[in-house]
Length: 278
Image: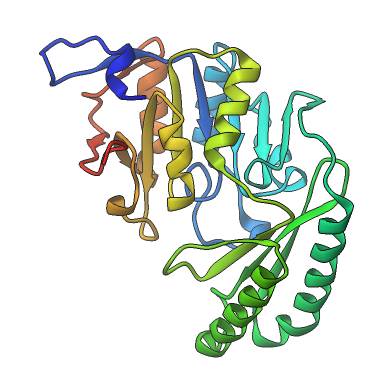
């Protein structure tokens, strides 16, 4: 699905103006600062304010690897959440996700117990992720704040290999100082498709994300904008456009003031040469 599907052009091939019918957003590094301690993570007041205004007109959904207990209280402007990378989905108070397989949950719980026994001594953070029913369905192993990063990384990678051998889903990308462990395979693109189907959205979906994990979601949207910070690299992202993290609220306000018509000529945007079609 390419950006030209719903586009109007003022100059052929140069400018796109697209009516936006919904906005789906990643959380970490997209609307909240990247690489901050969990307790300090929040959406800036100016971003929250404009998203509240937009949310009165069109649906806003959060698509994130965070769990619902963490992210929903921080994103009250949204009406839907696909959390834990699509393993827990809800629109308002309605859950869209079937129960998990008990055997996989038992394996995951045993793996988490081992991680909690071994990893903290190396300065590695272990973050539990529970679904809306309180079930443990994923956890994250993060060595960014370890004092001995080399030793922590070596131990974490060995642990990841063991988890793969036990048929748990380990999600990581080259160069990232963390990985996530899930009870079953995850796909942010599938999460976006499921939510847009539940909303009945046929066109005009804008997705914003900041990492390689968001590439399937970029491809599943009609307009995609990568949010760039010191941690992200535009060459790794297959979005249509990019915006710097410190201009996200500016972009959203421009969109709102333009009557929710996306305009490729917004001053804060840059076209991304590494498009979804490559």
